[in-house]
Image (cartoon, rainbow, N blue to C red; front, side):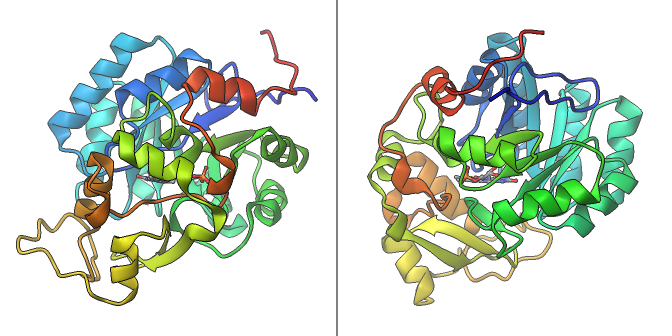
Length: 316
Ligand SMILES: Cc1cc2nc3c(=O)[nH]c(=O)nc-3n(C[C@H](O)[C@H](O)[C@H](O)COP(=O)(O)O)c2cc1C
């Protein structure tokens, strides 16, 4: 099968693959640069970082690669505008907004000539994004790790979104091996976004025991929790998520007001930070549905080779 060509604005990655932004600090400069060095688009997750930290990560990534680097920020965070504008000032190649978007972010991108790509879960939102100026959309199905905007499978959403827009459609959610990639491209996607497979890579910034938790988890360990941002979140069952299901997680003493709207059932930034640092007892482990297929921590180069193993590469 021939590998599709992905073009987002003027950006032409040599492979049609985006590494999903993974907060808090799971996809930082090292992972993003490793993906970019393989010809994909590497994404730094800005959510949960300070402006200074995001700046440093972008600069670090630039030293590690000449490839394409983007920044993902969750629309739900109070610092959304500040973080996106910082990435733009640092001349990032691409902005991805997770779980929502605003009209003005498209004008910020337009003014700086930087493509803006929202993550959507319906044909309708894809169409609105295109009208507002999106250069492409990532369509995320219910199989995805992290926050979910839908209960529909990515296999149903790809044809629906392709019919709704003429900009490139990048599919995300549960894409973990070569069969998944083939299936998604047969459905007409222009690119794939892969999350948790890269969280369990050598270059991921997750603590070693978090990477081990990913490779040891089975599909039946995946559950949904109620996130303070007002969406469901797909995670691995552990002591922390079980406590959450029983409403037994205490609220933090010092709330930083980091979300625009927060249900305050627990502090999600702290819980994701705990997991990233290896405190799994108090950590929330976001994961896609097909975690059982991930058996080894592998270098990015090897993961990408395996994901695309049956495709003929475009050489231009
Ligand atoms: C640990 C983790 C953290 C994530 N953080 C973010 C985030 O900060 N912003 C976002 O838009 N999506 C986030 N996601 C979603 C991914 O970018 C990606 O779209 C999704 O994981 C795709 O599904 P997969 O993990 O099955 O490949 C996260 C996913 C994981 C597993």
